[in-house]
Length: 301
Image (tube, rainbow, N blue to C red):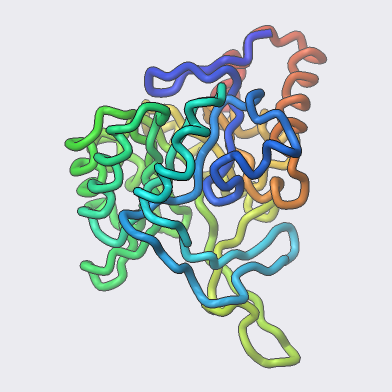
């Protein structure tokens, strides 16, 4: 069976990666699984300088998933390179680095610096970060800002650019088309949905930052709908994510139009979740006489 897929000129040995923020930089999982079996590793978010993150508590479980309010805590780009670049050069999967920032200059600085290092194959722009120069508006909820940040980052790097889309918008197709027109090579979707929980005994929000991002199986129907819509209106590949727990889930995402898939919340419950998903996909292919995974991409469109 052929499980390799092609995204923005890169060949993945299989369509499995991880959602940013759920897998560290990969090293943390090496004692639990053979990460060299994955198609790609997607790192935690990287900013120009260290970010402390949000107030605690930062994580809480909820029906069908979890809420997180980590706040993109990270050590900054220089420390990230010092800590992880040698590891990236030693592994088989492609390396995708998630890039975040408060303003366009932040994204450009990180993208340009990462492009100087061997061992990084693709960049993922997290356009769900608050844009402080625009009064707190998120880049990813405004098509003009999405277009602007992608266009400016495109100028400073030749690495393939993946743009991560938020579902917290009225029309995700408009945002996707803006990213594509500005030079995005691929899209990853979806990011988390806004949500919250309340501690009824304390009469206070459970999370220290009040609101958090909902992920896990609860958001899978929303993710599938978004991918299906965007696959019909854009021509660039999609990396699908949002509640993938099994191989069957991943097959659904690919039939909805995704070329690859990312496992996120499942990693917290099962460190081997990515390989379980991969093996589930292989079983589905065997049972259904599918010799090439590319046959099912967009099959339901």
